[in-house]
Image 1 (cartoon, helix red, strand yellow):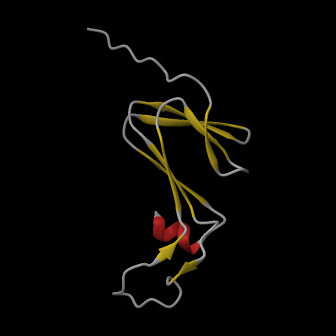
Image 2 (tube, one colour):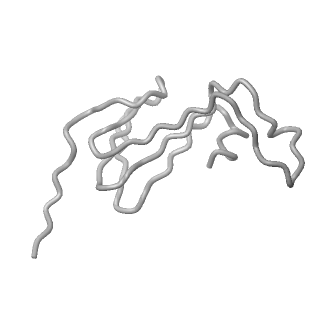
Image 3 (cartoon, helix red, strand yellow):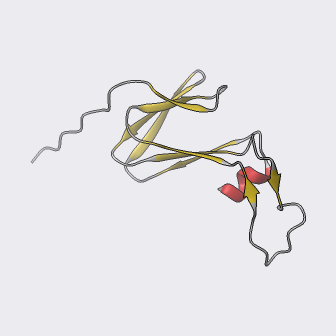
Length: 95
């Protein structure tokens, strides 16, 4: 995902673990579930070797932002910043 977002800095990368979901309402994203959601933002990258790197060369990128969000957290897309939007969802299993 870092490679893809680095090639397209205006795009926000979203990685979702198992047993997770995101709810998008307008310009807000809310995280629900028991794992984590990852946001990768390359809009502030100051340097990357992605354009000139050889196929066997590792990626070098500076100022990449990565946010790790759990249930109840969220993000506002325009700000590209995480925000705690509500209390985490309570999950009860039935026997």
